[in-house]
Image (cartoon, rainbow over all chains, first blue to last red; front, side):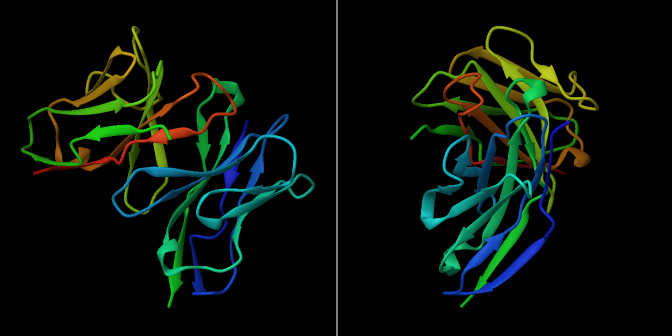
Length: 114
Length: 118
């Protein structure tokens, strides 16, 4: 069965510093991986996805994620954090056993301090 | 980009009453929509998969008679919380895939509905 783990409940980063939000996955077969962001009392917004190809995926708002097959990871990164990046971030993997539902990580709260 | 509209954004109701939440895909047709529930500081919990023209598929532990889902058209799905109780208070989010049943397509989410049952 597919699963996703986000090992950090919260990540604190100073504004201007690089940020990383971690995600590891477990799938049978090729993974279809996604990152979403949720602002307070809002739905989720799609950031980026990895399906195949280049291991470094670029997405919205300057975010990128690196797919690492050997480490089964898909960490979200940004070279220089903004205070407005503070939000809840979810990693997800497509559940190939249940058509195209997503399996969600627990979420990581990202706090960017000025 | 694809837009999913969810209404209302928040609602307060009395215990025992029913509340209907609408989810519309504004610029695409969605044969499948998903309904999630999110508890504070927790991830999304899939409640059910809403299929246009057929019965919804509920996840284990979700009461289908309490959470009624109707997907009458390719652009509208509704979730009705019947005989609401305070424990039903939560954040409900709908989503839809623009490209149908495609592994590659991201889901597009409504902004959610904050339900408070008093």
